[in-house]
Image (cartoon, rainbow, N blue to C red):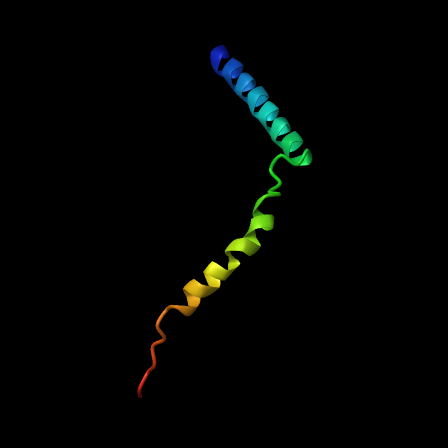
Length: 61
């Protein structure tokens, strides 16, 4: 039974360590996306063209 308590304690310590590392990475801006906004304007026309090329269905009621 003492092994279970030991494993739970170690797993909680590891989980807290990963959580602290995640918080520090977010605060340092590691997950900020600086590249996508700068190239979004290059591909915006393609998205508009794809939408306009779809045939329009007209209901004749």
